[in-house]
Length: 328
Image (cartoon, rainbow, N blue to C red):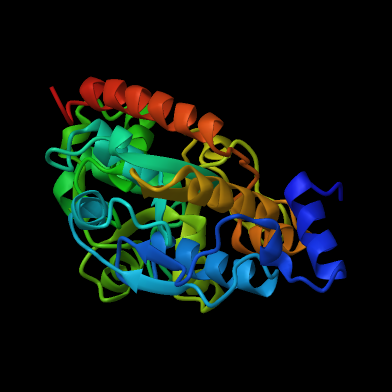
């Protein structure tokens, strides 16, 4: 695999016996990642797996501390960063399409995407719609037909707030199936995909909408049954067993990008450091293995390119949300 300039600098520093961090003007003293949800969900996965990979590859000088700060679909963490830690150079925060969705819908009161700095993506996590292993429902059209016939009979749990990305995914699927008033879909929001699946297994809800990385552990344990992956084609490897929505006649694709933002007043040196280190991790063979093992599809955006991507995403999601009546 071709090495980036950052990876080459890291290798050269190691060869000189100087340590990987010697090539940079900035070194974090206490690296920290905020996961804006309870343990077990996609944001938690993002912080913990990336923190471990950065450390294993020698790209950060010490262990990454992971702090779970749930609430408001990520709003509590966003406000914490903007209002209290806006110049913290050691801090990165897990983000995703759910973050852009909440920002697009003005769900973080008084906050906007321009108040933070967007670092880089680490891949895309395709959406899934699933039921418990004992459910009599075996296909996505079966589930959507039940919702269409008797909306009150099906409650769908997700790890984002009402109007969030998990909610939008099931609404877009319902719309594609021919459900005219998607507001009839019963969606119940939880703080993170892990809690949403727990409620599914407890029988409190009948279906789950989330991402493949959130569902994987529960699939491996045999607790849930994936009805559809919201990808253009079947995913490679072990995920090939899961049918797509499209092959079941429901034309919907839902990709949840995963990445990080940083405090708005982070120094340029620190910002460049985090962009480069996350990028070097992404370019590594080790991260490719992590992506394949967890169903992440390639998505490599860094720095200004990622900032522009998020701005476009916020604009697009705002328009979709208006079309389906989430916002005016």
